[in-house]
Length: 384
Image (cartoon, one colour):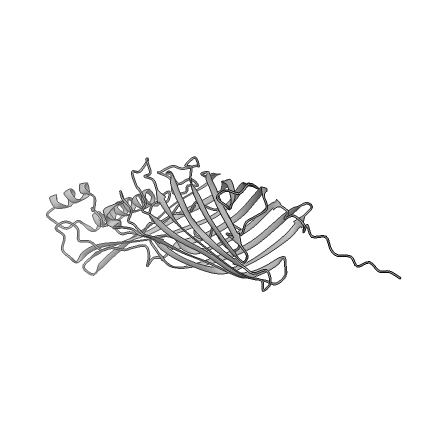
């Protein structure tokens, strides 16, 4: 069963700049033929830090700077298993907490104009971005087969709150003398996000189940390119792929894997276009009864082509991340309907050019109950 979550509400970018690194600042430095005074260095440090934090905020927005349309972990166990025809409603509560460590937030040293190599400026930044989001996903599954499979269509909406803060430290060094300046910027947003349509086709043959899907982003959510926190991504995207589920009702073994690619359209507000992304979600579980299962979930995400329109200091800015964690699921009746409850969590590692941390998903879905068996039990007639 899929937990719908196509946007990343938190952002991060990591890079270093030099004081006076802008074209204007560079010309000013070249006109000066003497070292700045200690007071001037302090003012320069404050100005450079302000520029740094401003650039950081400008770049750390939408799905640019390593934050993708696709959120790893959207698919999990039972992903390709056909469902009962009719309406269903999935509700997901998602909590995430990510940060960019000082080591990941680049601190690049660059010489400034005609200054001697002993005069350096290094910048480090740390971002923290917790988010609490709710996703609603109504879906209709058709009873009439399409291409021999089960066709479903749905759409996902989002509502929630995102907080983002960035703290930066600038260090200027002139010989043995070093001066540090620290600054922080932050904001928060409570609003609605983009809309995410989803089409799926599923096929079953015994213990083997296959699926294909097509989804995308309709950018109608809260988005402002000058704001740190956004629930919309500011541009359209299209994503497609396929998956497989092995489900053995005798042994209770289950394994699912879904892979896909994302194509991102250009952000009209920033003229930034993210590259093509590859993602793989998987889940493995063991049913302990007909209703309850436990297992593991994981994902791998890798950007396969470079961004365009990014600041040159970022380079190709390809992002990646891996995640793994536990899960538990429970299937239960609700009157004439069927309920599904799933709790899973991921710890992330091996991240590059994107946030890393942990996230949890609590999914509750309600759908049509599967039909009861049409086989009439055999009754033995007893005669005397």
